[in-house]
Image (cartoon, rainbow, N blue to C red):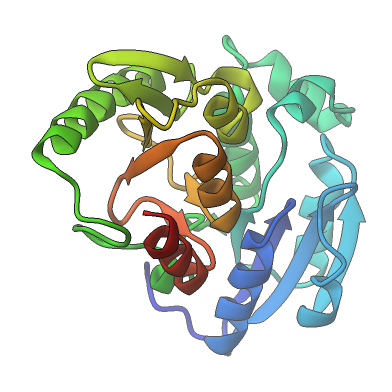
Length: 266
């Protein structure tokens, strides 16, 4: 990411649910940036307003209000962060500009809709940053991270699962799947990773592997895969004994707690 001069630039954050927005705002503040947050109503946490320099809530589907709010506060760079449930994309209440943007799309899914929002923001002179901006410390690199080192069999299973996961991601089906040997036990699809884990779990005798990816040419301005303690706890319940994800392209929340939990439960 380019180095931003705090005396010349202001960060605008489109904030959804979860821990992600807080970490983003804290990272930007540590970098000395002024931070303006447009939080999505019903999603953004109560911990966000005290952390930022300006804050206002907007409904999911509103784009005119957040854009005007950012411009009023001199925002120069914008980042999307936090969870918006996939179902919200199809039940949102769009304003007039959002309806126009949607009408221009040949295909409507998370990537095309969020991409259109990014382009809209950019048309007003505000540059969209990748949603990993100010988050470098929670993007793990390559290699074994926690828990028992994988066996050769597990590595083969992981390699096969990641190949299949990249294919479903390419088709915009989902970003995660579960494999046992060479068979797929569940694909993430519409309901998200936790439901995939729950529905595709294994048994104590026949555990499964969770594979999580980005799509080819993934737009890092939004929808970056995330893993946290909740993912690990759900995986334990579902007899997942191995989790594989892409280095430098997956956000790992609560890293120390995740590592301790993996080491404890194997």
